[in-house]
Image 1: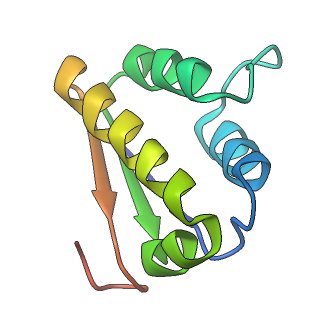
Image 2: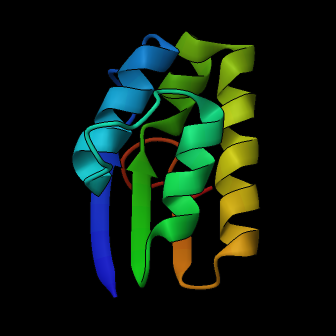
Length: 95
């Protein structure tokens, strides 16, 4: 299984989050930078574990928008049994 770790500490806007996810996960150039596109790309990944650190910081900075990202993460994992997304509050404190 491929393991990718990224920090959400710099995600001050949804655009920051989308760009970081696109870069880290190798989404295509035509990635739409929206939650529907994120869901589609996450469900297309195979044998991938994504560890997102500093989630507490992302929640603080993105506010209610963070909960929408969380819903997409959970939905994508439910639909894609080869995808594992692990959320870490800080750097090492798993949620």
